Image (cartoon, rainbow, N blue to C red; front, side, top):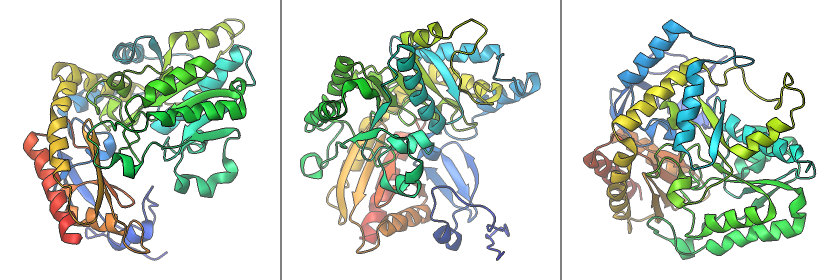
Length: 445
């Protein structure tokens, strides 16, 4: 095996990086050495503002001592508790805290280890619920184009990003269909917050109901704001119409809030920001500030009760699903510390106050050559760049590398650039992040 060595003398050959062009990366490696507060430090000695909050998952910044202390205390007390047939008391308490933050009526929490697992769990809960009602014919799932729902088999099936699907098409869950995505450049360019055009696109769900018949459809799953594909914000009234159609036809509505949950849109959950209550919410990422993996599904009480009531005798398992690390004591301790900080430091309000700072700064980049569109919602924004001829994604990669050289980290999605700064950022840091990004794009145009 040929060795590929970093500047620190570390052999890169054995590690297969996820969601990364490995051949390109190993020619131009980007090695992070340490992190503190809102900054990373790389192997070149550069201080980099974390303009992507880790990967949407570090809103409180890095190296938060209160989280580390909570994990250490839990380790000294009980490092692991079997997830089957027993549980830690703190896991019950965490479920209650999360339920209290969720929209009214969503008060049962199933823990997983990631957003991908949370999505697959929510799909299984939907199937289990309908089967418990005697509606075994409801097996279809409706996703949406350009959606990202993780990398589980269920998640890529309901997801709508072709690159995530084409290699694994033979594994896809049968009976899945997709709504159109809501993005239309000619109608939505340079929208601030929710676009005013596009609510009518929700009516396509009625077309799918007519095509498949409601009696075969178990659930619709949507990201309230599509994050991984580049901050696609729902048009005004769109989610409300989706909710109405689902209710009308007895179809469950699942919000994938792995990115939007816990404050990213200036509310506990996007469901509350947009005023639409789904039947389930998936979460992950920010719940532990990215320190230890954890995810979960928040479920409407009657869904839980329906499955419980069809469980047969009490000693029989009602729902044959779960993970070795569901509700693990260590991420549970981290999550408690995170929620303590959210409450005591009024973190969601702090994030909300930064929204107009980011909005004004990002839209000031309109008119820079190669910029096709700018969008924002909450503490998230995206810029679409004109692709280089016959080289999709290369302009985005060049922007990422130039940003690192200029002291900031951003998220790239092909030729789209996403910024989602930590909630602890100062207004000056957010403004500098965007101004630096603008200078980089302009110089590379």
